[in-house]
Image 1: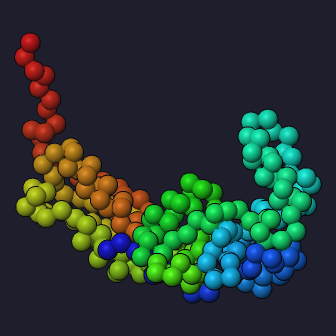
Image 2: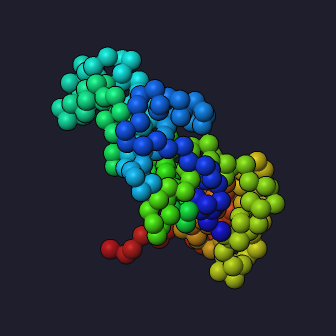
Length: 222
């Protein structure tokens, strides 16, 4: 069963208004114990996010990195942030959001691809902020109860009739070892991949045996 954002999200969202000052943002981060805050409009809808990285541009200077490979648009935006005084001027926009029903795996990909540490969670109907998903929340899937994880791993195994025989698994601290026999190399690979897709699995060690006839590759006759 896929774990969704609602299973691990924080029910409290640390947010500031667009006109919040630099010091207000720092205070909100300190009180909330977070490294980023959501910027909301008058209707509590997210319009951007201010992270510690955005605030550090102020301390670093004018935002000019001196790195020629950074695009002109990015350098200009960093310069604007360094000179900014309100959340609207400092934030990264638009806000990348998720809903309670978003799979945690998809949310993790968004964080990785966009290099962000927090995702505002919004109500899919109103669009208003109802919580926040932090990196530590995503990592919580790797601390699932052992019995719960093992149940999902067993559910992900193919039917014995399809696999060509009984398969057994051993789960130890998130590492799944699978043993048994399958009918083909491709089936062994597909089985291991299905287990890797289970939320909370750290790694899969495949000790599957493949039917001998599948190992023999006969080239076509010329």
